[in-house]
Length: 391
Ligand SMILES: Cc1cc2nc3c(=O)[nH]c(=O)nc-3n(C[C@H](O)[C@H](O)[C@H](O)COP(=O)(O)O)c2cc1C
Image (tube, rainbow, N blue to C red; front, side, top):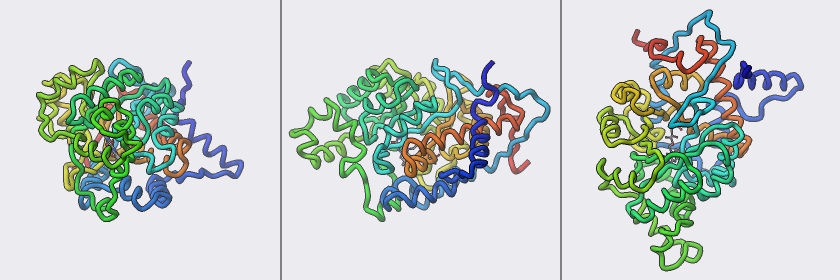
């Protein structure tokens, strides 16, 4: 028989450790965790990780949107054995939780993405690796050997570089390509502008480009000898503002891996995505980092789910903080949720152990809340268990 409390038991461990007089070193309260993490970061990294576009109204809206929905728990249901597993693009996952792609983790902790990958491996949680990572996708693959990992693509304007990145991801065992649509250029980010800080200009977060044979071929001197020219080259090919839906055919021709589009909010775009034959969608507004005053991602989820009508999986991020948030997004039709900033707070304070602890707590909270709601598996989640605050 499977362990009846696979994730929830972490709560017992915390209380039992307390009997020996030991309190958790990482703050359990997430808002405190965020403050503590931001304190240990440089002012530049603090602004980069903590900030968003403009007045940061979308960031706030993302969090507030979870409060519009309230859970109606059911009693006297058998939740003794819970199964939180889910099948996603042919892979069985232990839980519907994944780690969101976050770039430049080297500014958060020296071990950066390697620490996150090791934590993902330890916890058996899939990790979506950013194009803009501080370590190469091959190094990160080494650090997360068995756990499913996906590669997130910032789609370059240079087809040879695009092709090369996708080939490398395939060779290194990545199982899907996530194409981020909402960041073809960087938004007006007041905190970063105040610090006049863009990590890429010093080569941070460009490991995948600098190690790429097609990228290097376009340089007179390798990045190790002339970083300025390499950065300028990166700026020239980072993205192509003229790409449209039709161009997805090119990506399709470059890889056999499933393609998942990240940053879909409008149901019409969801329909376009379906029509263009992609394998999945991530409803996301990039954690409010791209458009100030945009619609909260959660508020877009029900309509996107309706349009997609189970033809491809719909994933969700932007504002997931606690177990109840995951339950709400899953009940509204998301197949999995992506955890973003909270993992970075753990990374900032305690490196790999910090990410691991954040993931362990998130899963424990999710599992406990599922049980308390009367849900033994993800099939038990549905929109009917949610009430809106207007009701
Ligand atoms: C510091 C930082 C860097 C990010 N880098 C990337 C990235 O490289 N690629 C990407 O697709 N999304 C990136 N994102 C967006 C996340 O994947 C995710 O959409 C977002 O963190 C969700 O919002 P939340 O963390 O507030 O829940 C980044 C987010 C943060 C906070």
